[in-house]
Picture 1 (tube, rainbow, N blue to C red):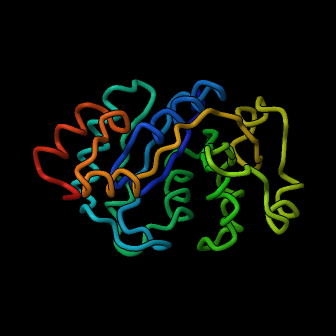
Picture 2: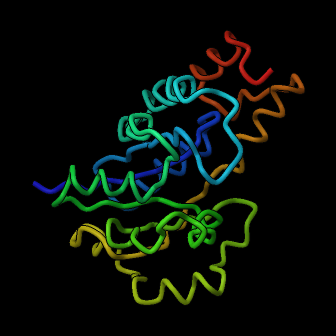
Length: 211
């Protein structure tokens, strides 16, 4: 039986409740069987992460252990070179040729889609679900808006009926939390208790991460 798989990528430096609640909300609203939380081992579009891929993945595994429908995925750690999403999705498509794949992106990330490596190929590999993000106007930029028109659907059932090729907007209530904010608060010796799972917070404190 075909599966309905979400893919939520991120540097996760560190994984926080904003990531987890957004991924969980999309999983529930769309009816995904699972969401693969894919760690970006070598992110090409931003400065190098503070923690190593191994450290970030250990925190990711701890965090998703409290969320039954979320799965920590290390596939990008198993490839050398930059962690391009198009390569990850190509690997997923080979592994799950008959399954429906859904790439989950926040509006901010989606508006920057045209800067991604081989971005035109993404829609041939997956559906894309675009979510709201707190603190942003949640509007498509003009160039992106013209691109998405042929693929946009308001019928989320099409995401399960087809393996790829649709773009759907899903309203969620993400927490206004960022990894940058967490790292700075830790550096400033301020509390981040409400931003992380308790297990992740314990490991971060024990190892003096981000100090």
